Amino acid sequence: MQAPGGSEEPGPGPILQMQAVRFRYPGARGDVLDLDALALAPAERLLLRGDSGCGKSTLLALAAGVLLAGTGNVRLLGRDWRELSAGGRDARRVDHVGYIFQQFNLLPYLSVIDNVLMPCRFSRRRAARAREVQRSERAAAQALLEALGLEASLWRRGAAELSVGQQQRVAAARALIGQPELVIADEPTSALDEDRRDAFMRLLVAQCERSRSALLFVSHDSRLAPYFGQVVDLPLANRARGAADSGRARAQAA
Image (cartoon, rainbow, N blue to C red; front, side, top):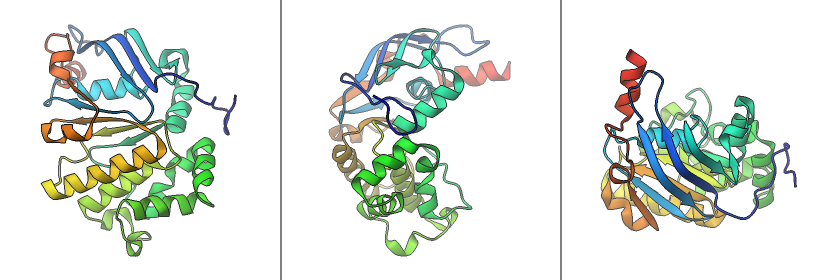
């Protein structure tokens, strides 16, 4: 069955499945990631825990199809990323994956609303799903911002005018609009104090539950564990010796 924009509707089974995955960066002497298995079902939440340099960012890039595994399988909605062309991976990513970046990556020259609407501009599927729950994509963006606690007086401001906590909520709304099956969050709470961190986590979890989006969340903060059904300590799960995103830096510098 085809969804709007030509992307197939997901079938039953895991949202994300990784099996016997190994990856090394060009020029690196060894693997930076060697992972036996990882899987996420609809509405399931997984915390990927570990300090800097243990391979977290590499794993997220593989899950999102930005990087391709050297061996093993990384499947999103049953489809291996390696089966797709570069353009096909881009289309599938915007249709099915919402991403909250550590630095948020908002476009400073766009308003809050227009930042949230970006996925709908590139994915007819996300736009159609936004309209399923609200009368328009814009109404869906406004509903998410309201649910995430960002007051309406800020919606027309440029993203650069917002505080860190406010930008975080905009980034979450952008990731969630159009009900993507997988939401990936890369250390989005690292700059927040404890109260703001917990408030954000409660809001994010509630929105993922509402849309039945699986949540893959990366953090070094063990205090977030109660929000998740699965917790994976990547330094223990990653069998690669010297596994690190620092390995990528060495390879790029060579």
